[in-house]
Image 1: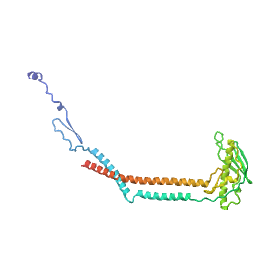
Image 2: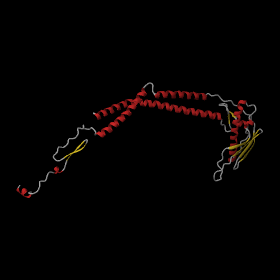
Image 3: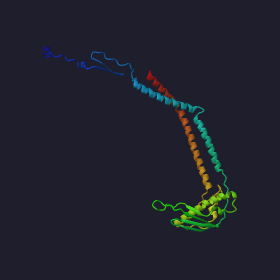
Length: 297
């Protein structure tokens, strides 16, 4: 129209907005640009869905790492299924150890009683208990006088510590071993009497502190009663070191058998688990190999 030519005269034509900017093209391996009027660069020929170079290498590294782990699982599974495998070897060794422990337990149960010897009913006389800050106990058996006293032990503030055992101050246990005791038992009986006399003295002190009367008609035989079941002698409280020793050994063997049985079960379960996982590991290896082939294809 004429009015457009008149009013538009002297003005430069305004180019299209697209001509004021550089054309840009994003490609997979980096951004390339084209100036106005130039040809737009074509993208690289990467396959659809294929990762870029750095991402591809990261995935390959991860797949190879997983492949090594799966190969180890396959190796362990095949080893577990082989006739000669370390799990079965350990199971066999543990089974032999269990048989040895079982034999020891059987021998302990069948152990005969140790030798013992009865003592005469010689009276325990002249029992005196001084229950004070430092308790003292004395008594006589035959011509031998025994004396036990507490050891004074003070704390940092000057107060007495809780009462403990008594200290043997006088009397020889070997002197009251009966003359008719077999020579091979005299030493063992003297050791037993020494321990039982200390137990008896502590009982006398504790009774006095509690306000209880002392025992009556106590004899030497009460301090060393023969134990016909396992042998040896029982002390004033009825405890027998021989019986305690055998029970402790019995508990040790029981605990050892339980431990060996637990180890053998664990070995068998591990072997069974590795064998069961073998088909799964093989399928995982095939999947990883397929992923690697697709990544490099």
